[in-house]
Image (tube, rainbow, N blue to C red; front, side, top):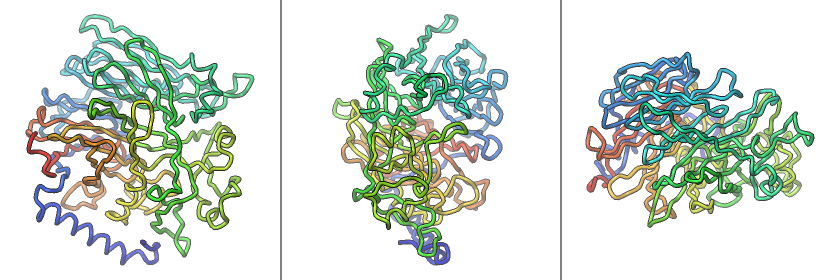
Amino acid sequence: MYQGRNHFARFALHGMLLAFLWLGLSTNLFGDSLLTLHSLWSHAHGRFDKSAAEVVTCLPQQGRVYVTNADENCIDVLHLRTGELISRWDLSRMGRPKGLAACDEFIAVAVGAAQKTNNGKLLFLDPASGDVLEQLEVGATPDMVCISPDQKTVLVANEGEPSENYDIDPSGTISLVRWRGIGQKPELQAVDFESFNPHRDQLIAQGIRICGPSKKHDDRWATVAEDLEPEYIAVAPDGKQAWITLQENNAIAMLDIRSRKITRIFTCGLKNHGQRGNGLDVSDRDGSDRDEEIKIEPAPIWGLYQPDAIATMEADGQIYLLTADEGDPRDYRGHSEVKNAGTTKIPTAISKQDQERLSRLEVSVSKVDRLQYPDRLLSFGGRSFSIRSTDGTLVFDSGDRLEQELARRWPAHFNSNHDRLVEMDDRSRKRGPEPEGITVGKVGDRTLAFIALERASVIAIYDVTDPTRPALLNMISGREASSSKANAPNKQDLGPETMAFIPASHSPTGKPLLLVAFEVSGTTRLYEVRGGGLLASS
């Protein structure tokens, strides 16, 4: 167990020595036996903490990388081999670019309105010139964009976030756009959740969080359609179905692309942090001297998974859903569902000792959660990644492994924020390392999952070939992105937001590649996936 700040120096030194030993063994003695990410280049897009690199995608056969740059309201186009800026496509007249996806005929860009509760746009851009081929109006707060495997259907998650005062709460929707070719108007259809409005009570009983307020309805509650907030989309390999994370609602929706209907919504359930292997660090002041201490233990807490990114994979003829379980409470000026446990009514079953330990942890004070689970404290996020069958059944949860590994490898950075000033343990009371992004790729005969830990600024690599028994292969820290002067602030990659995997068959180096957009540092980095004995059949 690592001690607090007053005793931290010797343990930090010990941790650094272990880290250097680990690095030396992995790169020298073991050669290619340890799978790792080798940096090929990095590109700095703009100012720090201005979302200058948020969403990254790539057309490897054209040698181009595309990155949304919200600092300049543009798309930056980079050379895949060198990372050099080829061009910058100005979208300032259109709005702020949010989502991005690429295929051979077009680049699809979701653009938010100046007032976020208004409808946004979906732009189709020429991949070479950036010229606008088509533009369509989509729903409010368009965020994630993806393209079906046949490159004919574009899907947009329109989150429909409320205004800060909660006077306006647009419905969350999915825009389905059929691409008909250059020169032909795309076919647009909005898929909504209106048919679920009469079933609000049943959905809540199933564990789906429909808990937002409303000032325009007599019962003072938002409708199901208003409350659901589509976050991220993953399409089945055959392109027939898609799954949409509803992060704030702790749920996933299933979309039948052919019939263009939401066929079901299922809850992600609760994570029992009281079980061994599901522990967490619950406080930034859990040391004996009321200072920081790394203390990952089971606790009488139930976690709302609240997944952000979602990806699909296929194994033995079955499709599986992989999610990064970040967590995200509603915390607006007009409505907040989060408080420190010490300022709320704690269930009597929780001991006095545990009450004190949990006092600084952020928990839900939503009326719906309190009515549904009167004897439980609910925290936000799973602090893990998980794998589910297509009906929502949990197949695997990484438990507390991510937090445990962060403590072991980088104790000085443990649960720190994704900024230049490292304050160890300051995110423990919130959502820990915050797994946000996830992508899947084939390396040789293995299937790998790459999980971006937003606050920790770390990429975790798992072998998920057997989705019931994933294995952690390695973790790469953005704070150590540069081998020389690794601690220089401008050399650090902070806040990984999105990733794009490039298989060896499409890679200019002949080896698998991983692109990562780091939102806080405003950098994009290209890694080559090396080692692990997994490349023999690539």
